[in-house]
Structure formats: structure tokens, C-alpha cells
Length: 189
Image (cartoon, rainbow, N blue to C red):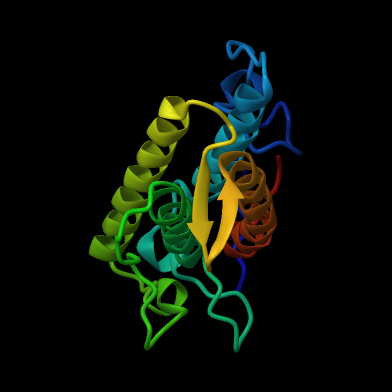
């Protein structure tokens, strides 16, 4: 049964947070070029996923959408840690680093292993934050947006990866919106 709760945001009932408290606000961020523009969109999308997952118990984070789907907020967080690793460490940096969750035997281990356990939740947050930090540093150190990586034998530029990452987060944030609404009724930006 779905439990609907009041949000702490009574002034803007249709918003997740009052605008002045939203960490995605770009008021202090100067977007001056293609790189800063793409990184700002990516930052905002990463923060959206984080906001949709915050304040929930391990049981709530591991709540699945609709059978037979294994989709959950915790699964999305684990999935995005692996996606960050795959694109930035493996593809662009050329590291021979294994995926965190995905395996040859279980390509959906990021979702299948998203169980209601505090240790699993803590590891997911730590893994995601580590991969985001690596990606941010990689982008900051890149000489140009034309830095190339290789994925599946094909060349791909940092520019293309950043656009893809914005799309990947945006798509999954739509899933996160619906999952969070089913968990506690919260909706919003």
C-alpha cells in the first residue's frame, strides 16, 4: 500500500524543495563554454538522482517497481555507478577496471543485487560518489572536448560521452520520479 506523506515544502507544494534550497540551482555557476554547459547539465542530473534517493530506508530504496521488473532507486544508483565507471574509467581513461556490479553471468547485477541492506546502500553511495569524482576530475583535466576513447572498437569523444551521460541520467531520473512517488507520494522537480 502506498503511504502518502506531507512534504516539508508547504510553500511550494508541487516542488520537491523550495527554490532557494535546491542544490541544483546554478546561480553561482558560470556557464561560459561547451564543457561548462555540459558539466552543469550533468551536475544537475546527478543531483536529481541523489535527491530522489535521499531520506529513504534501505527497504524503500530497494522497493521494486512492477513485477517482473527489478527496477528500484537503489538499483538505479548502483547502475549509474557502473555507467560512470564504464564511460569515464574504461572508455575515456582506458583503464582495465572491472565493472562494480555487472558481471558476465549477471548483466543486471546492479538491479538484481539491490537488496534492502544498509551495507549494500552504503556501498552503492560510496561507489557512485567515487565514480562521479573520477569523472569530474577526468573532465577537468581533459585538454579538449575532443579527447577520444574507445568503446566496442569504435572511437568516441569526451563531448559525445558527456551528452550521453546527460541523456542517461535524464532518462533514469524519470524512472526515479515514478519510483519515489510510489514509495512515499513525493513528486516534484
